[in-house]
Amino acid sequence: MSDIICPQDHPDIDVYAVVGHPIAHSRSPMIHEYFAKETGQAMFYGRIDTPPETFKKVVSDFFAAGGKGLNVTVPHKLLAYEMAEVHSVAAQEAQAVNTLWMQDGRLHADNTDGLGLKNDLERILGSLLQQKKILIIGAGGAAQGVIQPLQAAGAQLSLVNRTLQKALDLKRIFPSLQVHAIDDLAKSESYDLIVNATAAGLQNNSPLQKKTLEKITHPQTLIYDMVYGKDTQFMQDGQELGLKVADGLGMLVEQAAAAFAIWRGIHLTSHQKQGAIQLVRQALLQS
Image (cartoon, rainbow, N blue to C red; front, top):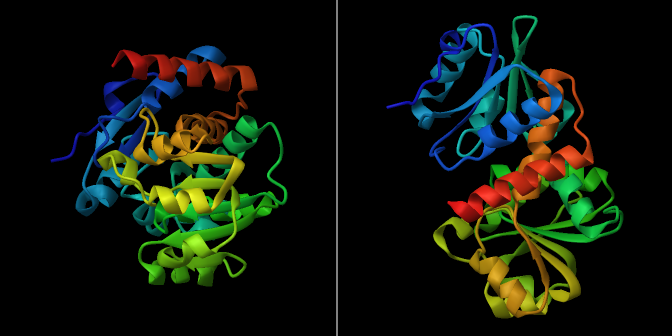
């Protein structure tokens, strides 16, 4: 059963939502409500929970009823790509989508995940990603969406996945991507940044053994988990190794800011984005 938001229930304001399965945990409504208040925008932003088998109908019905835009999260990003009629360069490169809107009667799509991650990593590091050695763990839609923007920023990207074939499939899309079998990872070089793009943290697991993590890091390595709102096992292992760690909340805010700019034509300031991070962090602490 889908939790449906009908734009017609919110007359005189523009209606947006995030769609996923599950979705009750999403903090995207809080972020966009904050952005709207900061910039004086009259809009409503809600959540839609729907399984993959009804995703396309739910999206079609939302826009047919006057909805203005959707964010798309797990597990629908590949379905959203298939459904869209017009793709941005980022969406084409990723072949996965997290932002939808109607324009001139056609469904447009973009992927702001990669830009969100790039901006957040540069914020944390206080420097550009040029020549940084980055390892991505995972080969699903989350990983696929961030490869091109990180490569465009000049990073040297490697990827590891438990199923090697899925990693090799991504290498066919991104030929310059370096791919490793997970069992061979400990034999590889050390990295400046290691990004967990798997959902392991949601189950209190780590995608890598701690001893493997130790072998591929140096004292300045940043351990980054796309999961937000909790100290994942991956992050805890990094902390125990004396490394700097971060969760994906900053990425969530940055990708939301990019979607907000597409929908509303307003580019948020660093101060406004930092305010959203602090707002959600405080809410997470209280929940």
